[in-house]
Image (tube, rainbow, N blue to C red; front, side):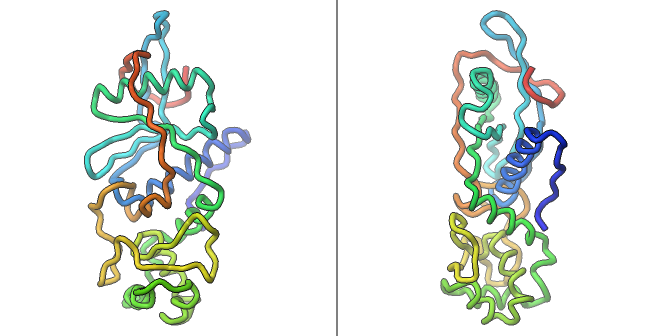
Length: 243
């Protein structure tokens, strides 16, 4: 099973929540991210006409290097129109004032998103299996080989495959997520591999949550909006869409 999703009754909101859910999974898999929150703050500012405007970024993440981006998850670059782009400039300017950044995250392509959702279903520590199984799995994939061959070398595939998917989520093993996962996909030693077979170390650079994403395979690069003269934001409590 994948991460839980509350499907709101209005279809447009459902698609929006699905995009946020996918980005949250990507952040959760990224080892550089130490914390995250949804709709954490409302930014208020005045436009050139003196009108009060506000915006609530959809996501916040904290990285191991101390950086802290706010982000939105638009379905397309032009989602929200001119209003959203002006808000992006104002939010980016406010973030720059306090040492944060702001990003509009590009949607993941269909195949990487599906692969990410599948692996997320195996992120729980219980999928490491019995004591010693993860060590056998890592030894079986000490060199790149097809998924099913390595699983069979480590034992009964029914028992082994959940541990393989768990290791792929946690970067102790790696594979290309841009193509559909199948039994002949090539699996290789991962960037966070540990000889003991334990869950990867926490304090590494660039990603999100406990057990997270492969170097650029999970999270699509974000277009970062730089500060402009579009106004300065001040933070206030609350959540919701733009006003």
